[in-house]
Length: 344
Image 1 (cartoon, rainbow, N blue to C red):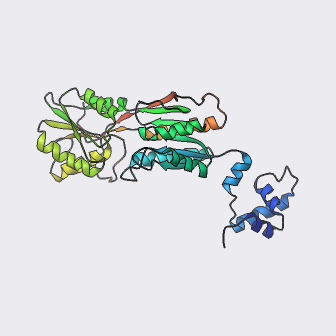
Image 2 (image 1 turned 135 degrees about the vertical axis):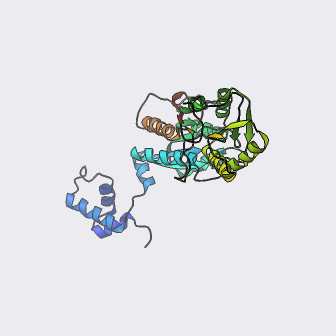
Image 3 (image 1 turned 90 degrees about the vertical axis):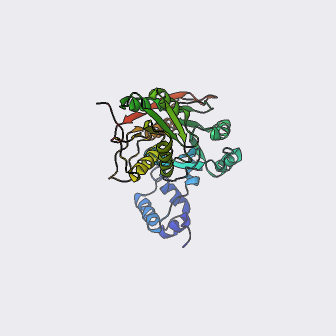
């Protein structure tokens, strides 16, 4: 059997198709339709598995419950915690507010082309968009603003750009990085190293360099994945004998560094004091708990959904602007594990 239509429901219930529409759209009482007839139609719809067309309902109501989630790109590892945290939190928070989320991603390296956004808008009536703030998304954001589609921007670090939109929420990475490094115990003549992947976020590195306040070596890795952390261990171990403290730009790099240490017969924190960033727990319950910085992506996404849906529901405190104001910041914080030497 093909797609069930309201005509199929009408035939089974013994009513007109228009009666099916009125009952399933909640107008039975207002139109004086008998409760027994309404019950018969609902039973028939349930038996046939009839699903009213969402687009038609939205056109009749003049509203949309679909929120776009504009990501800056897909990571190499689709189960990467950053992607999982943002997407799942957006879906869950929107659902609680009777909205749905449509994620869409930059299709290429040259930026999210305006015609790509136009194609999405031609197919989907977006009530508003939550956008990850990155240079690749600026043209798309400008196009959405020109069409009066409200955008709430999310900066995963302190905001460096101020695009047009409804509002701007941001994470401050500095508090957590500073807190963790200030908790470390280091020898006076000890050096430090920072492992970072491609496109490293400047706030994270700059804060770590200032907080270490000693000879520090920045080592670039090929990716942000664990195997690059293992490669970073080899570089540190072979070339920097005075380094005993390593800040890895994310927890996957830290996990790879720690694994390579164990393979070499070394242990944390005695041989190397290791910290990560992100606050995502290891996949293996037998591994050490990584000293890290909690990156509050879930909280940031919750705030963005709250602001956007609030605006769509009539909250007039925010208006579309040529420079979306930063209305909320969320601070990172320290997660003290067992892989780093800490002050007593």
